[in-house]
Image (cartoon, rainbow, N blue to C red):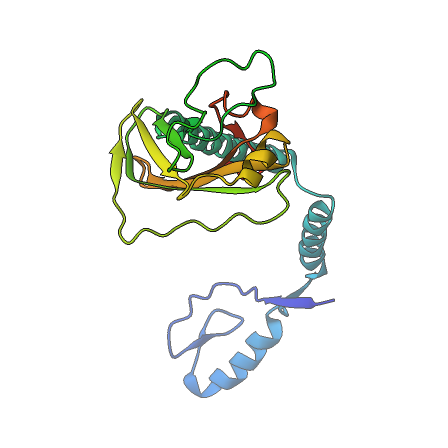
Length: 278
């Protein structure tokens, strides 16, 4: 506890001329008697008043104020702070929702506008003659052998079903004869010596023809009729859309007994695996 002492002097006003001292009768006292007069004057003046003031009350008030603020902080945020925080969180959520909505709109707009190059149809010709002992197989189609010295040939029709052109379109395809159901790996895609790019506008089709180098053997034809062999055609389409993003379409289709009568049916059937697009 701090104690402050304050001294206050109280003196009567004096009209004594400089260099003299008045006596009790009002007469001037010579200078040689000033020291004695000063002593008498000092003895007659009242003693200083000393005021003792306790400063502990102010310190206690400051400590109490600090303690109250500490208690208020310990109790948590005030209502105004909570309202401000809620407003900030709400504004942040609104901004995030707006950005997300704009991103979704841009993505959906690009999906609607970009090019989609897919396989529209696949047909085959010059495969094998239909079996003569099956009734009703009198229909003459290009699936029968029309060129004995050539092998089967497949036509793959691709189409841009999007609303914008497809640029730098490259289409690779290959035909092979393998077991059915397929248990082995199909041959890899051939790499052409040079890329001959093309452009497919919206709704434009393009036909690619691929052939086997020689006619089917009797064993292969029998396997087709017995549903143990199939002719597979697989390929890959690469292109760039209007947003300069690279796209790839992969496909795999086949010609087998389950898809129709050998030598009569001309359509290829999609396989369960090997078809995807990015």
